[in-house]
Length: 220
Image 1 (cartoon, rainbow, N blue to C red):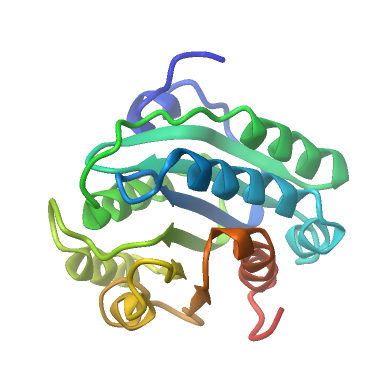
Image 2: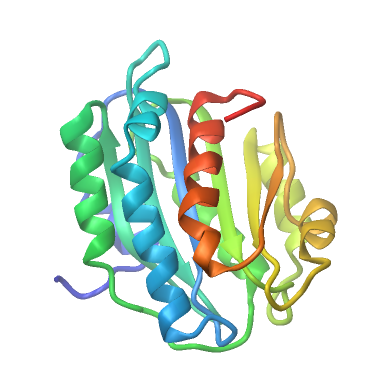
């Protein structure tokens, strides 16, 4: 696999993308609180989710019949793990799943710099090389921010820019994390936080979350 690119460097290598119903940046926690096995469950769960026919149908069910998805891994630093990929049919969803299966842990374990991760995701969306009817950041993690810039001001900037921020809170270590996400992370039209009890449940939780996000609906 090629060496990891920062979001800014990666964008210089992208051709213009077709117009989509949603540009979705998945921001995945790789901080010290996420051990090797838990990271595997997260990335594997995302890959399995995009192999689910319901997720592919949600990605292609809008007027433009397409979604664009990118993936950022974050801890104290952030790395672009999967650049923008088009999901306009089942093969596109399968290709994204394969790309996710190949993602290594690109960032060193460290503190939970959640605000920095959201800022990187927002910058990636700001330079999306196409037109998207909706712009969404999907944050998955198991802890509150404890390093770098606070997340609430970044969330507020995202909302002002027309970006929705959603959260998937894994509560195995911090039972009150959904409340933190609700207060400090999520925002924008239709924003929501979904609770996941532990990493064993991540695959089903992220599947439901993706269907809801990609459809832009209130239920999955």
